[in-house]
Length: 358
Image (cartoon, rainbow, N blue to C red; front, side):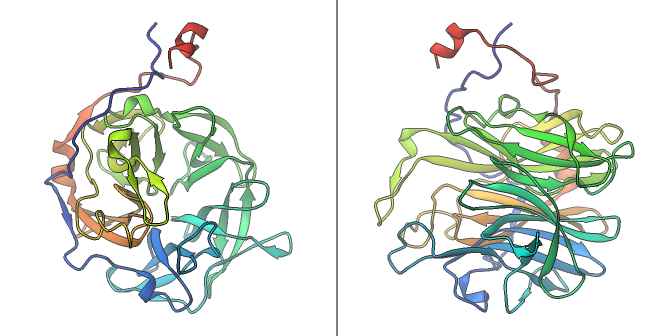
């Protein structure tokens, strides 16, 4: 059996799909929109809850030379009536856990589940990055941790409905020694204890991914299935750039969509053969003085609008700003190709000789 985890060739030149329309007033948020010290404002989870839009962008603060590590990383919190113009709270989100406040909470997603607003996130700490899920207290910027996981995990996303009586979350475990990374899911009876983990989408299933994939926004329910907006990464030295502070970057982050069964949200039924979004606009690429990474779009929010006819995709650009694009579902169905996962479960062996060829 051919090993589906073998690295794929460079996808080559990539462009955004013509069905995607960028918001004419992008970026939605930059550091200038946050009422406390900030350098970068990006990767924002967005949800519509009780008549308002809520946004939770990652906020990084660096010194003037943008040297690493960051001085601070946190998650902002804001509201909007139209999902376009956000008023940011005067202080960042606080996630309460075991009598304290979690440090460096970032890359958050927002999910409405059983009429509660939840934040899923990872947080950086001395013992590596850990994922978590927290429930909003209903006012201010305070959230209470419901569960905290073990390293190394990013891109944790709480599913907006129960599946066969169980809660579901998406996650992306990582191993710095071994690419590629894939999207997994776990189930829980109570949001605290999680198990029955299995593969949701493999990197090998995405035609324009070679290094890793990860969940983007919480899945959106439609009459055809659950739509997952995800990010996809390919890497090639030909893309390498050197930033003014000497950092080198050669990854390319794009965004695509996958469709999963209504009856069984773990079953893949279609995927976009090409990306929906590629970094191409002036606020997404080209300015190495302003951007933190090059060739990068990173979706974290997806909200249906216009009576469910269109989908708004909220995404980070260059780890610099928060942006918005819209796609009509009618057009999205036309660019999705029916398919199934190459690996039904994550239990396919590879031979040692295959490993040595990597």
